[in-house]
Length: 220
Image (cartoon, rainbow, N blue to C red; front, top):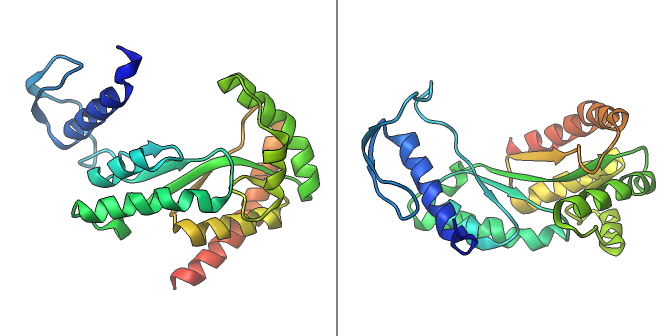
């Protein structure tokens, strides 16, 4: 494949995946692979169809395509203010409505960096070497210290801090996004296993119960 065809290739493959999911026998033709002529698609999902989500970065283009397809959206984020991502989710829901789908019935997941410690400054100090090295490994550039320092602000999308601050951040993000799920990226940049274990414990005993309690009240 030619890398310049990335966008078209992705859209074609995603469309084919949806068609395969919906049809046991499929006739289909695209540009980047051989056509299917009444192909029998097996094995079939146990419960009718697979739950297919579309992963989206920060920009609205892919979010709009997810909305038009009427599939749930998984939005990953690296950093910046929470408000910078509200437009992407709004574009997704608007595209879904314009395409005849019930946007309120389509779930949204957000995902990003996560690290908790007994206090925010300790969390920032312990996690920065890992996020910096992890970013160097994945894209050849580290994470700017000045940008990472903004994680002290509750409006930052980076969920690093004390358990209480992370609770406040996730609830703020929920107010802005109305998402149904948050995925915490714990294992990044060589975080030691003991620290991951401690984070899982803090999530289970402090963070998750508080978030669930607040969001349950809001829904009721």
